[in-house]
Length: 215
Picture 1 (spheres, helix red, strand yellow):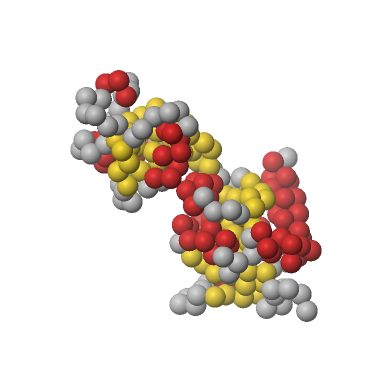
Picture 2: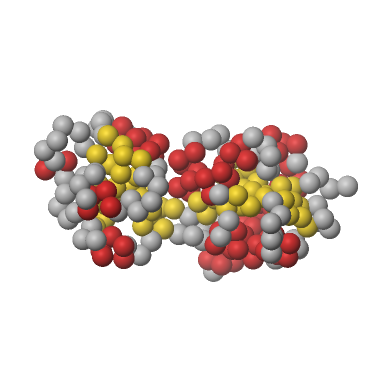
């Protein structure tokens, strides 16, 4: 019998795109596409199991070996800081992690002692500024991060930017790019050894599809 391969997928658009790719590899995704109240979904013919979770939880499931493979945004992966194998850039879900604020905002213009950054990515923000020898105060938010500069809670924000329309609507602009973001395929380190053949089947198959989309 084939080894069971478990995928941890972020609910929503990333999962739907993942199903499109996996179906081309012969995986029946009809059950995870329509999960109802089920938490664990299967393609029993292919011996593939799915768990649909919050994006921020995908790295934890893969790290602890509950899932062999996961598909998650690069931003979430960086924020988690977990020791996973990042094996493939799937290229969809593209956006940017950026520092944003009011035009011409700079640290030299801030009068308070600490430079405040509002973000739901405290680990990334701290690493980004520490790499430049700068100390900041992080204001951790999980709602409308753009409110930070607008109401004076923070000087800038670090957040994902897609079209930039929300920034513009609030008089904000991108000040610096931190990194590009897209969906990534990640693998548990132990699974890469113990289930190598099946893991390679999915990595190579998905890589071929990504390459074909770029042509």
